[in-house]
Length: 227
Image (tube, rainbow, N blue to C red; front, side):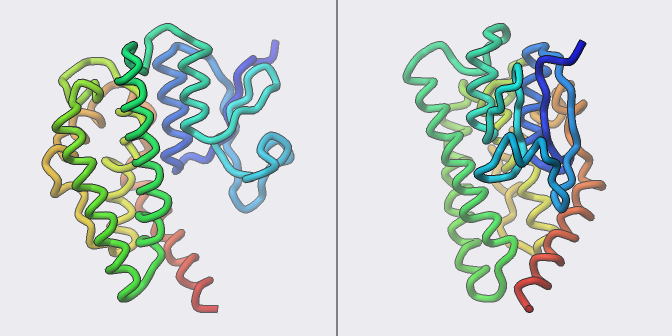
């Protein structure tokens, strides 16, 4: 019998990682398909014809795209072990910071990762400003970060913020970025608790495997920009 839930992904992606963690926390069995970003499968192109990227969650042959949308779908479909708080204001606050993190990572941090010279320095300053806001949010709204509050469970924001606490320092090293994420005390403390949670440990790619991958990405993008 075919598995009802399928996940298309690539192993180094922080956004695929989010979905894996959410599914495991909810106790959802799924079948995982590793994609080749340079030779995308017909299933991926069919399931996400607009962006043609992972992650894609397929539930009963219906595809859901974009990691934040997928997390919301998982939360609404499997209501055990809730990831979002019950209070409407707190839920709205979680969604605000989730979007803030993704905007910072994609629009600023990745741009700094591939930029050079003065342009890189300018974007890095913007990333640092964003990290200062995130550090403050973890301090002021710690109850919305289950692991930061010392809880044993993992919440929606914990899953989303992994891209900042774990992946961004790897970007910094691979792309020679001067943003120093782990110098922000609340982010550093939260990251330590986050990476030691059993479900996170089980799904988290090692820095030893991620660093060479993103160094190659950086070299590839740099070479392409020089042509």
